[in-house]
Length: 286
Ligand code: PMP
Image (cartoon, rainbow, N blue to C red):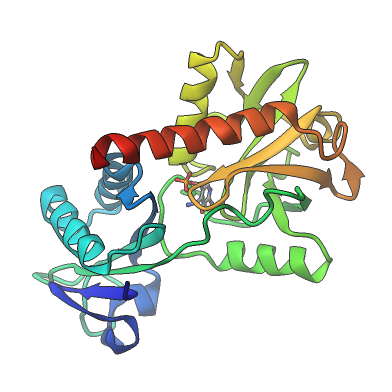
């Protein structure tokens, strides 16, 4: 079960995989990425992740990259690594070229991937998470999954320095957007609310799964703008993401949410998501 890397067609141990220093991802943050999780030896939501990767590249005018070739490379790497519960990272940059801001001409993209072990469940299954809210100081296209994550990195560190687990970005006008690496939901009077898809949040794959699960379970959902005060007064708050899965938030800016750790709907949705992921694996493994 080796942790492996893929670098432009070659598979090698992660520590041996090196990219040239003129990779535009390294010098300009001119790269897009995806992170996929596997359950029971099967990657979950691969097509959704590949579609989002393609969408990010198109929006940034990357040279065309065939989805089939990315899928083939990804599958080959994942099969070689044989890690049942893995995190698969894919990064595609606008290639390697001497450093000028404008797009390089006739330079192919550079693709790197890694497969590493992922813990069986997210980190806060038995506890719940404390978050703070912070002013959103990111750029205007947070719907594109680029490697320009410095604001997210700084916000996460600020949260840790303040003794909590994560930060939620809030607009100048007080609208709640998303957390540093996950989407945000709250529940009030048995209704589930989350920010609508705009340029200000990532269209999370787990967000789509949760919305779909809610529809199937006939739990009412609203995709609409809402404010920090709505989180303070919510019955439950939770975050969603590929590694976050569904994580209960028990305090926001030091204020306990609802009944603290109870989180009835959150736990139900967490279980439903895990069931969906493991059922998908079981069907493939049959
Ligand atoms: N928002 C941000 C800023 C993220 O980095 C992530 C994780 N990629 C998400 C939301 C959740 O997206 P997904 O469910 O596709 O992992």
